[in-house]
Image (cartoon, rainbow, N blue to C red):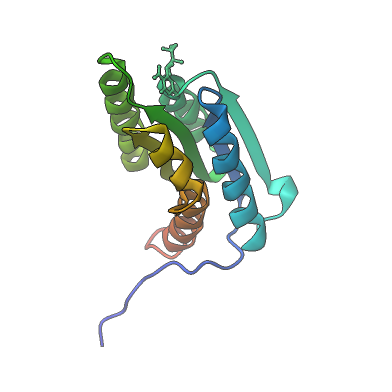
Length: 158
Ligand code: INI
């Protein structure tokens, strides 16, 4: 029989960080609340969670990288919200944050998950921040727990 490795969602070991941008805070605050609720209800102690806020989603990769490099965290959940406007700004910010957090999830020594909304409209963002389409902050937190628990089972894990 092959052995299958899969992370569960129970009592992850280690500390968690949440990085969250203040821009569009009417969306990112509900994402943060969803992420905190998901971590705590899956057994992460309040005291094992640190929240770091930055001005906008552009700043998320730099902040998240420094926290990953600190070696203090088993998992980091990155939260932000970019809403399309009338200029190419949306493309620049959303491309950089996807690339930056994506590279970190490959290179960081911990689990890094992506709870950044990139939407065409305010309504789409509202729907994904706890209204009609779930809460992407909570989803990113649950994915982070699973990856922390999976990484802990991998060959060579400490
Ligand atoms: N930051 C966001 O998080 N979301 C946006 O929709 C957004 N738009 O559209 O401008 C945004 N801009 C600010 C950006 O993230 C930086 O904070 C700013 O450019 C300073 O570096």
